[in-house]
Each structure stands twice: as C-alpha cells, then as structure tokens.
Image (cartoon, rainbow, N blue to C red; front, top):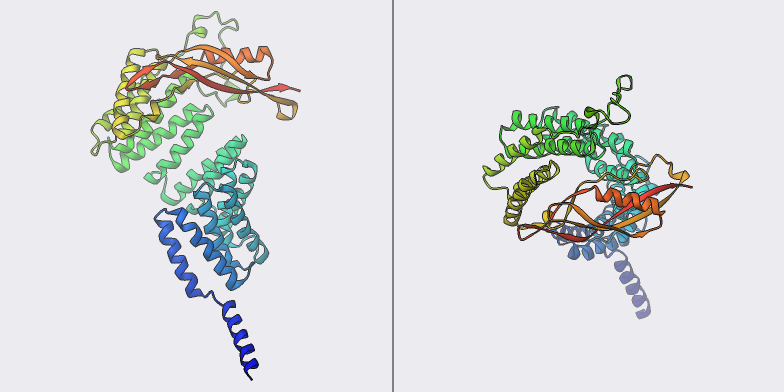
Length: 442
C-alpha cells in the first residue's frame, strides 16, 4: 500500500510541475516587464522578458502563436540595446511561428516584420531590410487601408533602405506617399503636414531638385503662418530650408528643366560669351530667410539656444559660400556661444562640407552600369584652413589609376568647408580625409 501511495504522489508532483506556469503568473511577469520597459531600463527588462518567453513556452509549447508577442518584445529589447543579431533571431522565430499557424494576411505579423526589417537595416543588410519592410507595408495597407497613418513607422526605415541601395525612384515614391497619407488624414493645410513636407523637401535637396524643395518649404511656411501664427518658432525650419535651397542652388546649379521641348541652349560652346561664363549670383532671399528665422529665435520665450546656434551656423555657411568671410566668422562665433548655452558645440567642432563636385567617374555621377564596371577607391587627406579653404591635398590610399586619383585630388581642392571651431574661434584642421568611390569600365 505504501508503494502505491508513493507512486501516486510522484505522478501528482510531476503533473504539478508540468502546469507550473499559469495565465495569472504570466500576467504578473508581463506587468513587471512593462514597468521596466516604460522606464527605459532595457537591460533589466530583458531577463524578465526572456522569463516570460520561457513561461509561455512551458504553458503552450514551442510553436504556439501565444509565443509571438513575448518573442517580439525580446527582439525589441535586444534592438534597443544594440544587440541586433540576437534581435534578428527573436523576430525571425515570431514570423516563422505565424507563417506556420496562419495566413499571409495575419495581423499579428505586422510588429515582428517591422522589427525584423529595422534590425536588418541596423545590420546593414539593406536588401533584406527593403524586402521585409515592403512586405510589412503591403500587409498594413491590405489590413488597414491604403492611406492608414499606422504604416508611417514602417515607411521611414523602408525609405532609408531604398536610399542605401540607391533605389532613388522607390525612395521618392514612398516619401511622396507619406505626404499623401498625412493629407488624407488631416487635410492639405494642417500642421500635421509639416514633418512629411520637410522630409520630402530634404529628399529633393539631396537629389539636386532645389526649386521643388523650396516650393515645399514655402508651403510649410504658409501652413505655419496661417494655422499657427506669424513669427512662430515653427517658422524657423521652413525658413532655414528656403535659405539652404538657395545656397545649394548657388553651389551646384539650378534644377534642370523637365521640358525637353524647350531646353535652353548655351550662348556659345566656347564659353567666350560674357553672359555664358558669368558666375551665378546669390539670391538675396536666402540671407533674408535666415535673418527672419534668427529674429524669431532671438525673441523666443523660452529661448531655443540649440536651434538658434544651428541657424546662426547656417548664416555663417551662407556668408562663406557667397564670399563674405568676415561676416561668416562673426556668425560662427555667435553660433558657438548659443550652442555652448545649449550644452553641445558638436555641430561646429569639426569641418563641415559645404560644396564638393565629385569627379565624373564617381559612383554618384558615373553613367556606367555596375554590371559593366569595377568599383575602385581614392582616399585623400587635406587641411581645412580657419577660413574654410582647402590646402595640403594628397592621396593616401588608392587602387585606381594615377589619372583618376588626380581627378579626386583636384575635386577636393575645389571643395569648400565650414571651418573647425575651438573655444569660439575658427582654427586650422589638418588630417581631414575624404574617400571617393569610382566606377571603371571592365
């Protein structure tokens, strides 16, 4: 009899161990995890989140969809801690469980797909990131509608992936789509449009479409003045954007016309014509926009020292590019003072490139297909003087020909940089490097 009671007791204990985790237990652990997560204590939250995965696995098995959310939370913690390889494994396991237990339109796929795509982006696996994030965006549109605002969190890393891959047409399409989403959700003159308008304008600036960018900055400025009020602090960013497009246009030339039926013809092929050879002139509206922004910032209450310093640096850049070095240095000194008040002078602590025309063989300008070309590189070292000029240019590393290396050296000599600042004064900056990637025909 004693043996029978002993055997029965053993079976009961084993059964108790098998059902040790309960919904109530998991809820308690989840609440502990959320308290730590919401307090941004990610390192402490991670073992709690991993414990919740173990408890869920113990209760439901290793392939149950109940595991998806706990695994996704573990992935998010790893991502925020910069542990991207570990994040990838958690997100992948979530996706595979859902693929095995549901269909391609499973709503629960959205978060792990987004997390996996962002993780691939952080790992530099841009092709994988674009593929996964496009899948997540398509799923969000199928489930929630073509213009649902919830997809914006997916579109930003998707755009970054396209940019990294050089898929400019796809990037522009998605950037324009973010603006359309905001217009559909809030209307065409709502302040919610300020961020997507700025994002699209910055894109146009990056691809040399300065007139198009300026039109978007002007539209943002109109929204601020009509919906928020004139001389509001939100005027500053569109005003800086307008000024920047004029500066970039002065440096790199105007946006080419899309009208092939009325393209302008040079006055003289030789360049002998005085009109043809005359250097472009700075549009005074660039300076006026920056001065207006600085005026708003000087009267801001509470003060916006960081933004004030950055805008003064913009004004210094404007004066440097337009040839007024004295005014440029005065603006940089005042910018340093404001940034010092804000707690960081990092913006001015190293030289910043203001103009650089890459050689024709560069990846950015070459018309060669990558299938027909070999990529080479040239790295040069140089000094940026206290007034932003370039001296002592010399190649330090290259696998390109002497003529290609020379083309990069000449391009750097013609560049213009904002100077390095130390204790509020501009100083020479030796040892600055630039690496140019070139395409050479096979």
